[in-house]
Picture 1 (spheres, rainbow, N blue to C red):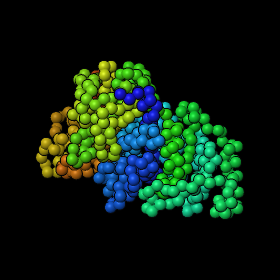
Picture 2 (picture 1 turned 45 degrees about the vertical axis):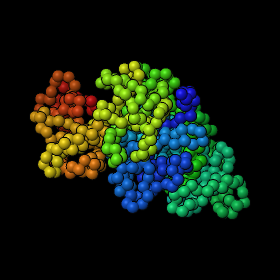
Picture 3 (picture 1 turned 90 degrees about the vertical axis):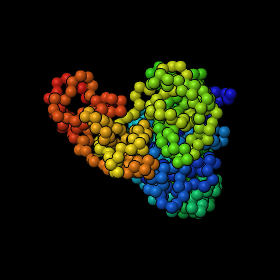
Length: 518
């Protein structure tokens, strides 16, 4: 068996977060390219173009958007990097929040032309609440970008964290020449490659060279040296302990689409990102090096591979050593489960593995037992007490278009419910028609698309007027005519059309207790 402390020390588990269209999936693809995991990078464009490894779902490839989190594991320079790509669209924030439960650090991608955007602010807050240190990459320097100092100032003012540039961009748009490493004091000049699909050649030079002065012109070169001197004088020196305690974020610059700065960036991720960290569960803080095996399911995905047609549980190992064929306790059910078919996840591909260690994200074939938030341990009844779950804001009754509640219709509803793509509620009159709740419209669209394409069940949706969900606690029920349904755990849920209606119900129902979460 491999040495546990050494295996922990060489692992990094990182999520990539951003506002939609900031280049997150492209960045993931280029990190895979530079790690050697793939030999040619795909494009996030949809249609007939080469598709990416992390956007494995057909609807993602058609539309060029990420709607599901994915996991890839790569080795680089003796270290093992677990990369967790997340959906950028806000309709799938719940998937992203759950993925952030499984990482020890995050890469925050910002569009250098747009700066800090709305979804980035929300995801940054989640990282801060979880104590996740963040590395920042200013992307799209191949396009016209805002002033670097202005961008750094915005990060500090909007996100409330000190932004310390460890590299500095030289030009932007068509004049983008490369980056200057403030630590090694080297200038990295990059060249474009055909179609941007292969590694870019790198030239390392001197920031004071006559060649660079000639390329930039005397005035631009003088301003570059002035900016670098100004940054060195005004911005505090980078301290890795401050970064790990979320007091500062190191900032890097480049262009994922053209491969500018990516190889340098992956080296910095592996240097800066912490190895697997302790995790809080109901039994207390669990240290990675503890001998007892512990981990949790943060995502369930059906139909990743059409040749398998099974359900996969994305499982983060927290402590101990995972071994193929081992028996683990499933605390929620009290059952013991034999784990015979664990595998490494790489987009939609899978390879059987014999062992895994803290920080690793592996796939477990789901026999219908595992749910999002479940733990597996050797003997301790450790559970995660507060796993993210959002209250739906859009509701629809779901009918099979052919009119028959077939076996495949029920299977699709049950499996997509397990994934957390939708929440299913049941009306108290016992109606067989599922009431589907989602956070955003695109989530409902994805649900209908997958039912048709993966389960051969076209849907008829009857939209409902409710926009607020409240779980009922205690014996008191609303005194007015509020629709009450049950969730998948049998808990009572009241549905409302507005905040005013919620307050009206509370005012007239003495002792009624409502909660935004189950």
